[in-house]
Image (cartoon, rainbow, N blue to C red; front, side, top):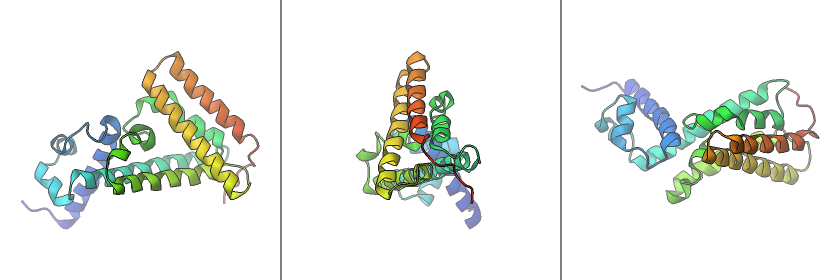
Length: 199
């Protein structure tokens, strides 16, 4: 039975959402097309009607994951009393984020895999990183663009690295120490930041 163009588009968006979650949970090679489509409630044949290849889906799903994560971080920064690097770090470097692989940061879940794949996938990661750096830069003191950029890179590397290490050891004293130490360091970096003004 043929589906309408509108339904086909909805199906495609749904597959991208499901893949976005499952790739972060299991890695790019941790789930095949059959199981992915089963999770989406669709048939394998429908996959090839919507995507050129699994590689194509990796790119689309990664871009979706970055976009979703950026929206979450933007909401944290939209809070009048929360628009600081310290607030962002507190949100990101949480025990809950250790467990939420499928809904969590794309960089922490998949950065180790990305270099093994296509230039298009690496471009998706580069764009996602640039978006994160812009968000972090919005929380930093009004200094030169070069200094803001450097601080943003250092903060992003600290957050992603701390989350990866905390996930590696699981929920224990060391994971808590890693998260809290990184969050405290980033909070100290943000103390000189001016109060954010909502426009």
